[in-house]
Image (cartoon, rainbow, N blue to C red; front, top):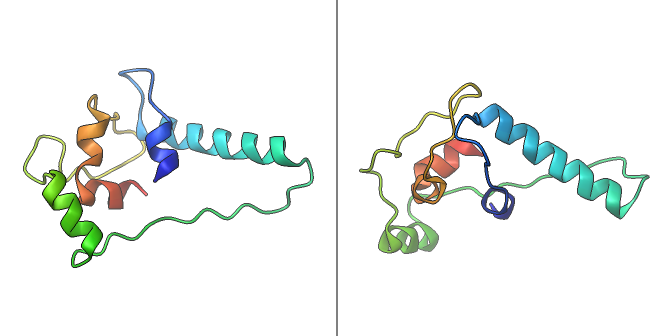
Length: 98
């Protein structure tokens, strides 16, 4: 999730496909910087369990599933929401995004 939060979208016209390309470029660039002989890259994602302490904390912090950006079904051609932080407050959105 750190990568998702540190990379920002610079254009209101950016799509999730554009964002995925940005993630890939970032990861490959870091790999090349570390070593030119990298043969494999393993990316690990979080799983958001509904009954976890993490989910409860997210809910207390304001994980809203009742706002305009909740329950977005992420598709490549879909534009990235303008309020990215609000989008990421929804555990459901995070799960669909990764």
